[in-house]
Image 1 (cartoon, rainbow, N blue to C red):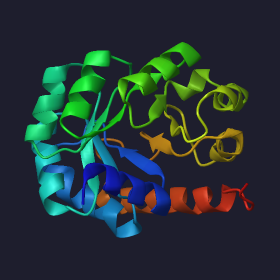
Image 2 (image 1 turned 120 degrees about the vertical axis):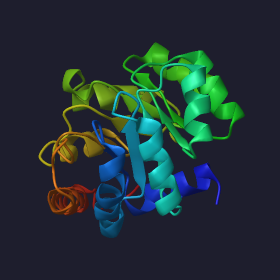
Image 3 (image 1 turned 90 degrees about the vertical axis):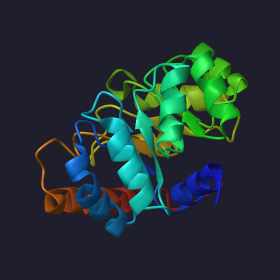
Length: 215
């Protein structure tokens, strides 16, 4: 299965990306297992975590059915390192055309960070798979709705930053297609059991707040 096929499958089953900032290689497998057991298939380890490439390699090897990759990917060399470690997902806080280009060249799923319509259109033109709307704390659902009104109808827009179980409903109603979940899901020092419970709580909130009709 290609990275893009994994991404599509993951979005259909559970459109939530786990952001495991601060994860250590020692924790990678138990935390990854806690997520995969509940149905999470989209997992990123930010590159400013301890030995992130080791964690990505361990997760990619242990959970081939999941789409594993990196966040805070800032340079083309970062993209190559993630790919060499077995990662198939590249997420950035910003839009760097060179990063997107390298991810596209290597066949990886790429979600650059954007905030404005200009950045969004430029990222899509560069070949981005979808868009990370970041930081969501600064972007209201009304702004998401306005962006969705002008972007191509099939644009995958993922608010990230400050997403909680309580505010997902408004973003979904505005047109968000999924979310990146960070400290509300995982923080360094959490046990696998705690992460498992948080993961299940987010699933319950997402499914409870999903629109009941589809146009």
